[in-house]
Length: 357
Image (cartoon, rainbow, N blue to C red):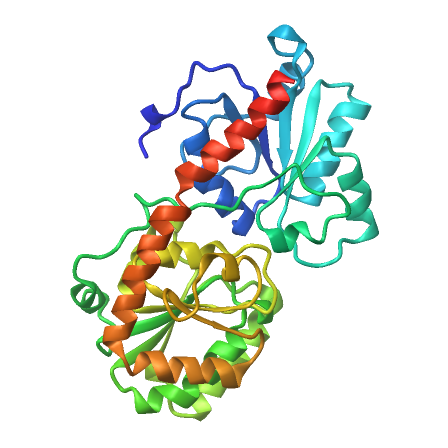
């Protein structure tokens, strides 16, 4: 998206806090949808930078901006997505007496802690990204708005085989997992399942993309040892943390993407793969059952079930034609139901109800 897609002259009506320096799934959702919203609505972020063209203000500017309401007495919207952002909004309004309406998007599929429930009770409105996540809220959400995917950024590769060859990796196609290296993301199941399947599929290579923080360095070392003990080092490639701009290319080059966390709030990786025309194997958590049609766009498996995952890998990696058909089906579904423009329109329409009210 170009910088001139954003209407810079619009008055700021919505503030998006980003109070986590490390790039995360929440940051990714902001980076995807906020620039689209900013084409027709005055939006600015505050806090850690978001790696896309989007107006950003400092804390002093935020305090000045929210001291007075918008024309007509309307309070600006402060849209939080993390607990510390809800707290910041409450301090802004109650301690500093700033004019803001507080909105929170809840994606968690678990019972909220007492602290989170206390914060949620003080929001003016709570949104959710899926019916499953909404079911964990003590009060019904004001709206359920699923995340979308940028279909310009995540798109199919005209020649997937050539794109794979350009990587210089062994084999003729790849199966990959993208996300932080930690147990919750299903890395152990991914590695152990493929160690049982790759010896029978010599043309496939496993690709692991994601940052390993010091806390999980020993976890990664254990997985690498597991692979080495089975003589499969050359069949697994660990690419580490890649720049944000390089990730879409990997979704296009792979023939199968695994989105297999043990617990997930939404799971944007699944949509990014689908929009890239790539088949997906996903666990039954997050919004994956809402996004992915089992047997059409990919396969769904139980969480933390290595045996089931291995069976699906064996089924799909041995049938390249079926993988391609699933990828085409996944692309059609992403285009029809989960575009980023659709999410942006729904969010802006919801904001309008608050601003007009």
